[in-house]
Image (tube, rainbow, N blue to C red; front, side, top):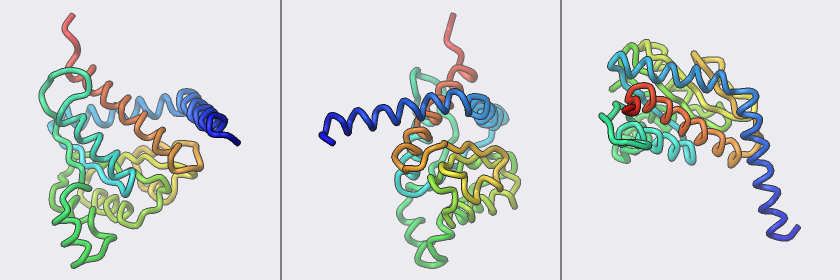
Length: 194
């Protein structure tokens, strides 16, 4: 297969994925946006965690909420639990890598807050630990996964599972959903002037 054929195949796979998201996950995407909007309306915060590319997605989502997506507005309380290298390395060293997000949920999470847990496999031990802590503290849990959703989907108030097998396509679906959520948050909480 030459490079142009490879590129065409990748783009076709992405197009097929987004068609599937539109047809199969539209209502769940809307429900997830509702959970986020409701938490923010109640003055609660969004905690977000993930590993690798999902860590980047966590940071991206927090940046869009604290900063902005399309227009100037009041910043929204969102924290990516993936960003503080001192916490990550201290907790990883002292308690183990499985606890790096759990300890932060225990430190900052309050009843009514929302934890967004992102994992392509849905089986990351440190994500499952964060969800367990969130459950104990009374946070809502929203998850983004791929493949079959993994163990974390059974622990969520709402689990969105991107129906793809490869990490890159799962992550394409995740960032697409995140951008939709950000746009819905802005349009709902900060409607454009008419």
